[in-house]
Length: 526
Image 1 (cartoon, rainbow, N blue to C red):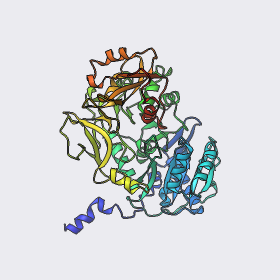
Image 2: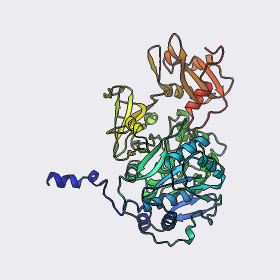
Image 3: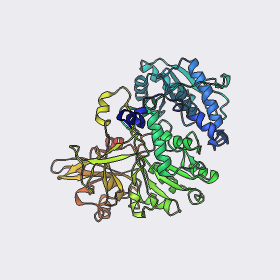
Image 4: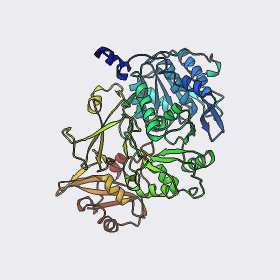
C-alpha cells in the first residue's frame, strides 16, 4: 500500500468527508430495531419506539426547514427533560444544524449572554420559562423565531406543528467533524462556555461507553441528569440509542421517583451524581426498593463518599465511580470486571479509545504515584469552545487539559484528587481539599463537606471546612476525628455547619458559591 493510499485508509482522513449515515442516527436505528422501546415516560405511561422517534424526527426536521433552518444554523431549546428535546436532537442531525440546549437554571443575565453567543435562529421554550426567555432576549442582540412548548404530558400539542408535516425528509450528508451539540460547561460562576461537540465526538463517546461499560440492547436506565448538561445526553442517553436500549424519561428526577422507576421498570443501570445517590440511599423508600435488577451503578460529577458507595454495595449493587467533562467524553474511564473492592475510590482505567497522561506545571510527565494534571486524548474530544479561540488554546490541542489533578496507583488505576484551582499551599505543603473532604464526610454527624484555603499571614493559607450536618459538631471534635486520617497541615482550623449547600444546577455542589458565602473567616474563628 502506498503512503497516499494508507493515508486515505485512515479513519481520521475521512473525518471531514460527508456521509449519509452520520446525520441519520434515528433512521438507521429505526431500521434495525423499529419496535424496540426507546423512551418510556413513567409519569404518563407513554412509550416511543425507535420507529416513532424517527418519524417524529422527520416531521420536526421538516418543520425546522419551514422556519428557515439550514445547515450550520443553531436551534436552541429551553425546557426540562422531555421527548421533544430528543426530536430536536435527531432533527438537527438530519438538517445539519446545531442543537443548543439552554439551562433553565441560569440567571437572566447568564441566559442572555449564552443566547447572544449562540445566536439561534429558532428557540423552542417550555411555557414555564417564557418570561425568563423574553427578558433574556431583550438583553441580547439575538432575534430568533420563538415557539412555545406547553407543559402537557400527552404531547398532543407541538410547537413546531409536526403533526401537519409530511413524514418523509431527505437529510443532508454530514461529516463526523461537523458540529452538532452546543453544551454548557460545568462552570458554576459567570457565563458558561458553550462547548462544541461534533457528530464524531458524540459517536466516539457512545462507542467508548458501549464497549467499556458493557451496554446491552435490553438495558433500561432512568435519566437523572438534565438535558442541558453533557450527562443528560452523553452519559447514557445517546449510547443507549446507539444500542437500541430504553431510557426512562421524567421532567425532573427526584430520589423517590428514581427509586420507584428502578423498582417498577426493572432498571438495569443507573448513573447519577454523588449527591443524588446519597439522597436515594437516605430516603425512606430505600429499604423497600427492589434493586436486584441493577447490573451496575456509577457516580459522576465528583468524588463519591465512602459511606454512599458502601450503602449501595451493601444492597448487592456493582458500584463504581466515573469521570468526565463536557470538553471530553464524558465516559472516559471504566472499572475492570475483576477490580478488587479497595479500588472503589478510583475511577478505574481508560476506556477503549481514550489516552491519558499526568503532567506537572511545565507539561512534563510526573512519576507514578505522584499528583499531576490529567490530560486526555482521543476521538471523543470536543472541537473547542463556540466563538472563543483564546479559551481553546488553554484547553484544546493534541491533549485536552482537564484542570483536574489525578494520580495513578501501582496497579494502573486512576484516582482523581480534585481541581487545580481548589488546591492550595499551607506552610509549603500542597493541600488537596478532596482528600480532606472525603475524610470529613466519614464522620457520622456529617452529610457533605467542602474544604478551601483562607489567607493566613504566617502559613500562607489554612484549611477551612464547611459541612452539612449536625450543628452540634465542634471544631475540636472534628479535629480529633481527622488526626489519624489526614496530615497535620491539612487539618481544618475553622469550621462552619450549614443546613444545605448551594447547587450548581446539575446536582453538583457549587463550590465557588460555598467559598463566596463562607470564605471570610468569622470573628474569632481563626
